[in-house]
Image 1 (cartoon, helix red, strand yellow):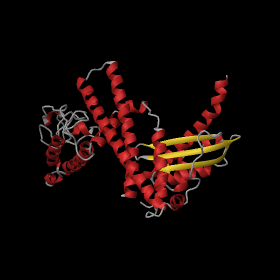
Image 2 (cartoon, chains in turn brown, yellow; image 1 turned 180 degrees about the vertical axis):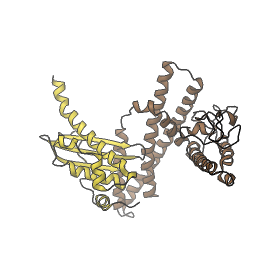
Image 3 (tube, chains in turn cyan, orange; image 1 turned 45 degrees about the vertical axis):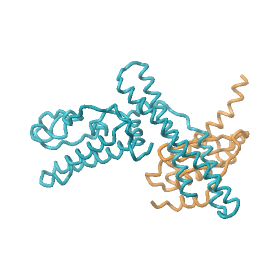
Image 4 (spheres, chains in turn orange, purple; image 1 turned 135 degrees about the vertical axis):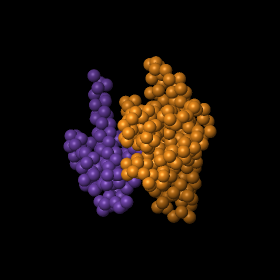
Amino acid sequence: MNDNKGNGMDHHHTHSSNPRELQMARSMCWHCQSEVSGEYFCDRCVKVQPVSKETDYFTCFGFPRRLTIDPSKLEAKFYELSRAFHPDFYQNKSETEQTISLGNSATLNSAYRTLRDPIQRAEYLLDLEAGAVKEIRNSPPADLFEEILELQDTLNEYRAADRTSEIGQQLRAKLQAEQLTLEQRKQDMETGLQQLFTDWDALQDRGDATSQSRTERDRLLKQMREILSNRTYVKSIVNDLVATIG
Amino acid sequence: MAYSDKVVDHFNNPRNMGSFKKDEEGVGTGMVGAPECGDVMKLQIKVQNDMIVDAKFKTFGCGSAIASSSLATEWLKGKTIEEAQKIKNTDIVQELNLPPVKIHCSVLAEDAIKAALADYQKKADGPATDAK
């Protein structure tokens, strides 16, 4: 899986999306005080409404909390909302509306950046579900840490060595092999994550509240947390390898 | 971002870099990582008669992480177990003048100290508990 692109395996979140049905955490129009049933604009006075700080990014986009998102749908929604909130359209409006437009645009941009990347999306979801995750402590992956520190020693040796010498060449070959292995491992982790994402979405779609499904939920969150963390460690040593041996 | 002189000094001349054998008597190993940034820290202490006689570290991470662990080993040497427990990440922040974005590096160093102490304690208590 590539961080920068979504994936096409998307079937869960198709909701007959009507932007006027968005669940927003506010109830009253700041301008006319009429009831606002969760929309970006007040029904009565048509004033733009601020996206609440408590509104999570999924809700902001009108998407359910799923880990598989169709990138083209996300993009389309992003453009639609970008136009709706764009400060250019509020230049002749009141100061309050200009402020709301700026705030909403900023939130929208962060939301889009986070949701369009599958890894960041998962990290974000784990943060939202943090209550459950905090209780599940993963023990640090000692073997992986040892490996990384050993590799770092080899990297330092290589940096200090004459690169044209035989020993320099040997070290370089060793590092290149390590890089390939680690990249493969990162790939495997991402495949594993993809499976967990699918399992998570399926569990959410079932939506039952049995103790069994709660156990399953905790297991998925814990596994995602673990792989995401390990992936970060592997990624950071791979970056170092690439920067050193090019 | 500009590093403080002390961070640069520890980064260029790290103190006590290296490692002890894990199973050596009196050695406690703390291995911790920061999943947010991918930093990894290994900190070891060697204890004789309740006194930390030596300490070593290996850190994969940014300059602040290296400096924090380097400083930690410097501080640990010559301290008793009890004194070592009292080292706080805020002490490290203060000494190294770490900016807010690098405070997590000092937290990691404190975690590493705690983990090393706990590992030593576990090893020290272990055989006695088994014998009972």
